[in-house]
Amino acid sequence: MGKQGKERAKARREQRLQEISRLRKLPYSSVDRWWSSETVAVVTGANRGIGYEIARQLAVHGLRVIVTARDADRGRAAADGLRGEGLNVEFRQLDVSRPESVESFAKWIAEKYGGLDILILSANPSKNETVIGEFDATRLVGPLVNNAGVNFNTGADNSVEFAEEVIATNYFGTKRMIEIFISMMCPSTSGARILNVSSRLGRVNGRRNRVGDMTLREQLLKDDCLSEELIDDMVTNFLCQVKEGTWASNDWPQMYTDYSVSKLAVNLFTRLMARRLADRPEGHKIYINCYCPGWVKTAMTGWAGNTSAEEGADTGVWVALLPCQLLTTGNFFAERREISF
Image (cartoon, rainbow, N blue to C red; front, side):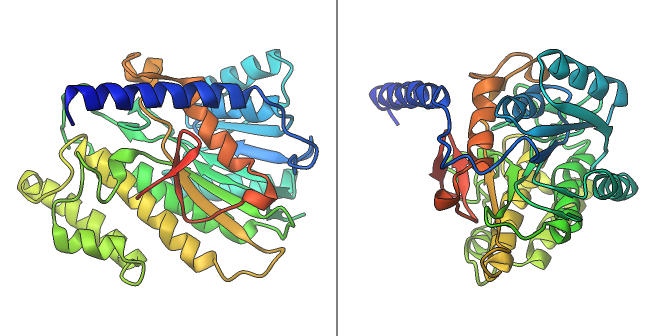
């Protein structure tokens, strides 16, 4: 793309963001507002950044929000801040990378609330991790949103030293939450909703960061080839190559490689689950999608992004609260529109 093409693309994006900003100020009509003050939303990794802003926006819309985080002190502080704004929020500690923590949290939700309407999963970052967006009854009802992700690289760095932890949190943590909570989603005329916050860096066929292995790429793009085994084998193969020191010469995405592979797996798992859930009868539907918040300007990215946390959270909240007549499944969104995988 030449200089003029880049300028035109930039102008189109700025125009699009201005339109989204306008739309964000419009209230939901009574017809489109399928939720109430009794609707329970869980946002994991919500002590800061995108997760915090998603929690805030959902609470502003009138939902009851459960803020979760790996770090209990930071999570409580985040919840206190939101309550200080007059919002209906509560804190509960959760580490999505630990099966026992996820199971304990699920039990707590069932015992205290008897069900859940929206679940938004975030990164559970430790103090050394960077969280990025683009670069970074007795049952559940509603969206399950897996937010952001962990990444140990910044700037031009592309170390895979912590690849195993990145994959474990971003992919296997997301997968674990879906597998545990999906069986808890209760029947609803509004449909249960799962949303994974992902990244354009995890696109199979992206222009700048695609999977180089053409055979693998073709398999990943074909629904009849896509399987849980294929996805798990892909990330396992990547981790084996990391240990062997051969990953750089094997056609993996070249920007933030471990993070990109983890988000590629999340995107693929989203598509796979949409296919598995497609045949559920009316009243028992579960809709699963993913979205990219963009390169978000927060303390966690060193303020290097081009999108505010408010803007980055917007599309996630928009997809999670889609009116019933606009519900969709198995899709990838950015800036309030569908993009390709």
